[in-house]
Length: 314
Image 1 (cartoon, helix red, strand yellow):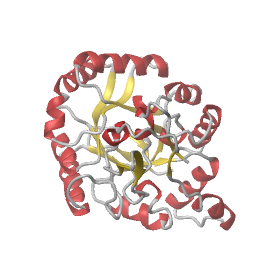
Image 2 (tube, one colour; image 1 turned 30 degrees about the vertical axis):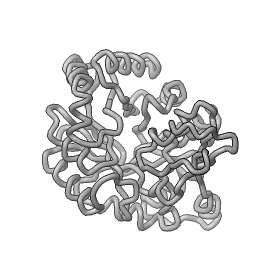
Image 3 (cartoon, helix red, strand yellow; image 1 turned 90 degrees about the horizontal axis):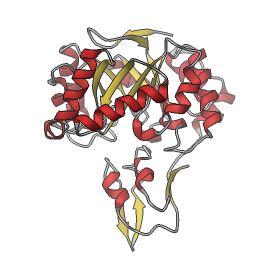
Image 4 (cartoon, helix red, strand yellow; image 1 turned 90 degrees about the vertical axis):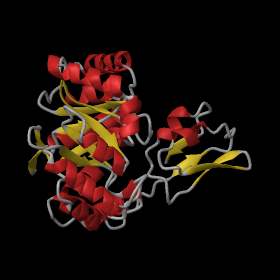
């Protein structure tokens, strides 16, 4: 598998990063054991880094999968605001992943210079952790153009994980062109870039060749995180990335797995899911939550905050 370097001073990794949200309890597509099996299979195929987050609640799952792969790198993220919160998040990851040193740790879902200012103490703690050798590379994930631009100017930042796809789905400010310009700006500063949601949360899955080709063609993008929850999806994506023909039987197994956000009929209409949705895809109608399927990118963040367990990716 093709190896890439994340920025001027980053790690050498496979072009494909395993996006573990798809096998995590947050989305609930597979059991923990099934997720471990898929992840191990992907590592055996040459993928050598994994994207996760504290919110995904799957450190134990990843620890099982990587125990025989000591060179595999792991990216995690947290919403920490204070130095104390960040210190706790780092120690939680180190303990659960059985690693003294974390490879990558990011501030999760930063939107602008304003949100970064609000997380200033957490960032300072990340900088201290980097100086102490607790974490090797630090950065942010973002769905926003302003997040990419502001993050690129953060002292000590190594990597940015932005949303990017050929229709600009999921970008919460600006246009696709704006996002491409922001990525180019960050890359010119030597920052590593690996993209997320290249299939637009499934909306672009009918033309995966176009989706992958576009993202790979954007100047400054070195890697791509792909969410996979089956061996078939691993095989399918790696064949596409290698420019090889995908057998028809494999296409049928993978391409027609339509997913959606399911909202159970016992929804109480409390509105907590609306606050958790970065895309503004949820609203309250007739005292229950409803989803705009065109805006939803199937991140599953809404399900985590629902006190009645009404929301799930199916």
